[in-house]
Image 1: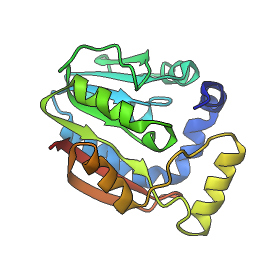
Image 2: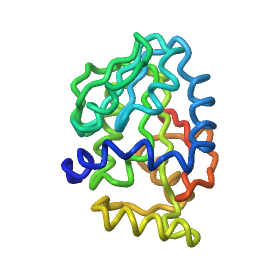
Image 3: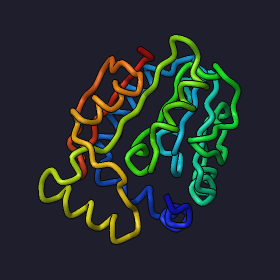
Length: 200
């Protein structure tokens, strides 16, 4: 992944996501119920949209991104006092083992060359019995709008390393040691599948 691309994209990321607001609203509502009074880590927070919507009900939340530009955007505006933004690499997290009750990584695994490395780090920092929430884009070529939007992102320099279908993505999570407890496909411009997982 090219960090400079995400730094450049950071100021317009929030505007680009507005067209899919109703689908994200579903995720914010559901995730809020899952993180009540929990120690939460978010990976690939971007400009912090999800974190700012759910952190107020958590005990503590750290939202990270490997792009300094994204974290600069996330730090703007108001957000709950228990929310902290930090620059961190998903494949080498600077946190102790068994530190978090919930780890969230939304719409990021598909752009990572080796997403299984991020899963290993998530496994390391997640407490026993902890919850992984991992919504991800799927079906990048599913319908005209998805193909057009995927093409625009490719021109902008954002490369999809993996183009899973919903079924392929869920099987991939299972293969890497996670039991999918809940999943729901959401029909955004590029469809995404919301998932909640626990260790097998």
